[in-house]
Amino acid sequence: MIYDASLDQLLEKVWDGERINQAEALRLYRLPLEELGALANRRRELAKASAYNGKGNDVVTYIVDRNVNYTNVCNVYCKFCAFYRVEKDDDSYVITHEEMDKKIEETIALGGTQILMQGGHHPKLSMQWYLDLLSHIKGKFPQINIHGFSPSEFIHFREVFKLPLEEIISQFVKAGLGSIPGGGGEILVDRVRKRIAPLKAMSDEWLEVMAVAHKLGLASTATMMFGHVETVEERIEHLERVRAQQDATKGFTAFIAWTFQAEHTKLKAPTVGAHEYLRMQALSRIYLDNIPNIQSSWVTQGQEIGQIALKYGANDLGSIMIEENVVSQAGTTHRMGVADMKRLILELGYQPHQRDNWYQLLN
Image 1: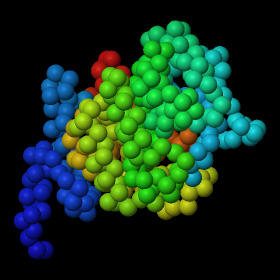
Image 2: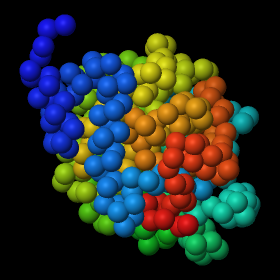
Image 3: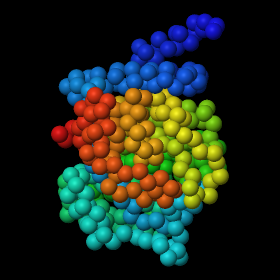
């Protein structure tokens, strides 16, 4: 094997916690998986060393929440989605307040502290419908955080309500919205977005929503759905755009990547497996040096890979997912409870702790 001094310098740079660029990220991507994982684990330790009174390296967190999809009616027809319906479909729906109450009551009974509320881009729901729903939830369940509405939904709202983003988000916050999920991130490269979801928010629009939300004091997450029509270079460009946004506004609490799930979707693309998932999660931890938390995607990968991901840069197992409707429509139906979460974490020698949306420990 020919000695490569520049690669050694890059590995030392990563080990010491220094920032890397896109060209360096591509070199790291090509490393043996175990070597890349060791570097990501090192970066996890550096990122979490001072967290939780200096015990962050021993802690792995999870949240108890419920994914509530308030409607499956959508007019953007994403090729990778098996969940959406049109209004005339027999199984289309819009949630009622009574149905929402039942879901939240079940969530609270299981120790839940949050609902992750997202839906299709319904062309006919009014702004008042959303404000009434938020006010109803916050009035009846003040202890529940509403982590709701992805950036692509807010771009849809701007088009339908004919109002500026800042005004829409401000009114949603007054009605009860607590934070924004990073759904709809897919790949933040317009070439890819035009291939898989041409009617959905483009990259700059997705980032614009996050910038406005962060300006208003809302925390949010960032995501990446990969393994379809994008190149590795475009995945890295996605990471660069997320990191640059975080440099500017500092509002992302966590990053979550998952792989495209193909079953029952219209997108014809080769899917990728667990090795590629672990490789990209590890690279994400190294590249996103300004985002403190990386979440394992056991929902798409299953419990075993979700656990292994904790040695590839992740410090959080995400949600027990009391309910999940979107990924499961595409053929993936993994389930996990709190006892499973704790077991997986303890088996690796970490301490399991339930958290809230802002990564404050609840136990």
